[in-house]
Length: 108
Image 1 (cartoon, rainbow, N blue to C red):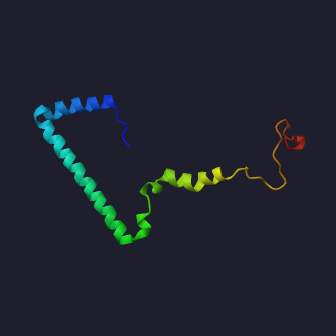
Image 2 (tube, rainbow, N blue to C red; image 1 turned 30 degrees about the horizontal axis):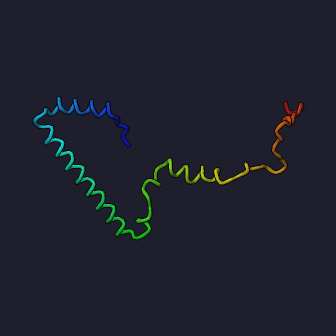
Image 3 (tube, rainbow, N blue to C red; image 1 turned 60 degrees about the vertical axis):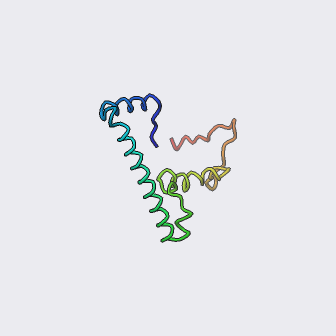
């Protein structure tokens, strides 16, 4: 989700020391940890309550499958990967490796 490496973490830590000061920084970190824990608990409770209300259909559903990228991949790209041969129009055949493409002087 967040692509934060070691240099970015160091910059954030130094910035936090300047903003909050070294005396208040442990209290701020403790409060942030407490808020994260409460948010996780609320999300877990909401998810379990939804699965209890809607039954087994919602329990087996993965929310990551609802993203637009996953929907496109599932419904459009999986069909292309399953086909071994490209679709052919009636009356047309694929060219051989050394065969030249047909040329029609009247059409050009």
